[in-house]
Amino acid sequence: MTWDSAREKEVDRLEEQLSVFHRRSRRFLRSFASRVHPGIDASTYAVLLVIAQGAPLRLNDLAEEFGLDKSTMSRHVTALIRLGLVQRDPDPLDGRAFLLRPSSDGMHRLTGAAAARRNEWRGRLDDWDTGELADFVNGLSQFNSDLEQRPRNTP
Image 1 (tube, rainbow, N blue to C red):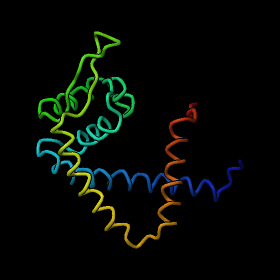
Image 2 (image 1 turned 135 degrees about the vertical axis):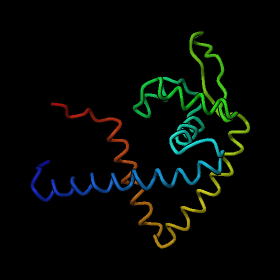
Image 3 (image 1 turned 90 degrees about the horizontal axis):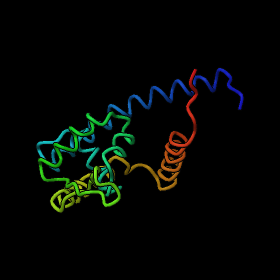
Image 4 (image 1 turned 120 degrees about the vertical axis):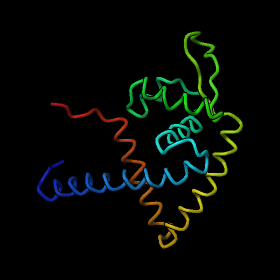
């Protein structure tokens, strides 16, 4: 594909909009984190969501998913365990490792927050027709897939 100035400008717009999206999505997550438990922040809430979606998960898998080192991820997981939202079970395939999954209380709290999140999304997307929403979700899905699968251009 040819990279002309118009296409370069679109990449600049993409970077700008992703930055705005990142800031606003953190604020959005923060508003729902407190609904799950007053003791967690947006980052820890995001970790809990990934654990719930992919359980059982190892700490290493979580750290890789978020691009964090193990010690940082361990602090998030320890907080979730301490609050009773996540439990860790021995990994039957590796006696040194643990598998993480939401506790029953964690799942109960996430279910309540998910209903509130869905209602919030409905309100914010009420003016979008189904086709616009589907196009956006399809494009975002493709973008996320490309981010995961394509090798990085490194100097």
